[in-house]
Length: 230
Picture 1 (cartoon, one colour):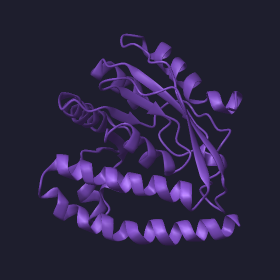
Picture 2 (cartoon, rainbow, N blue to C red; picture 1 turned 60 degrees about the vertical axis):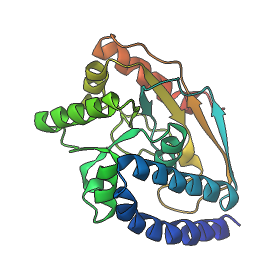
Picture 3 (spheres, helix red, strand yellow; picture 1 turned 30 degrees about the vertical axis):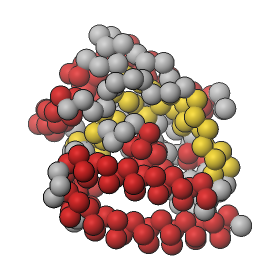
Picture 4 (cartoon, one colour; picture 1 turned 90 degrees about the vertical axis):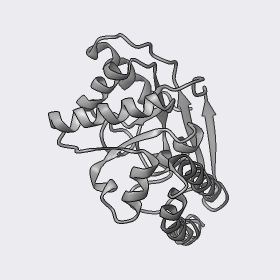
């Protein structure tokens, strides 16, 4: 059954996502705000596909804060990129520069307002990330980062990449850690499974902590479901 569900998801979601993405440049002519609203349609469609086709229920613990914030989330599947984008009202998402270079998709993502960063984390790349994040903050948008730097398999808890602490310091916004366990049902390779994915919004962490303090607090919070399953 899970194989049938996975096949149906691949056909419906990816099949219809192609025209949705191809239409994005036309929508963007109305401005970035229109494109962000259009993106919310896509994230809503993804949410429906996950629930209706894969048979996955989403359990949310805690809640986003009111107003813009820096969200630092665990990253185990593509699921959370789209699910959190919808739940956080089109935040500026920090993503690897390679994705922003994909034809059509990359152009649309830059118009949406993603923050593209070189994973080599050079000083120039980090300064560009800070600049783009501050521009998003000035627009009243939240910023979403996956501070471990890449997608990880369940059970892995690598150290946070240096860009996170710099972003935390530069924006001086509360940081909300987000734990999730999507990788158990949505492996990078293999058959997707039905079940329950938990998204746990942690308590906001105030600005002003040292790098060591905020990294330790966020690392603990985003990995809590690995030690304390919901």
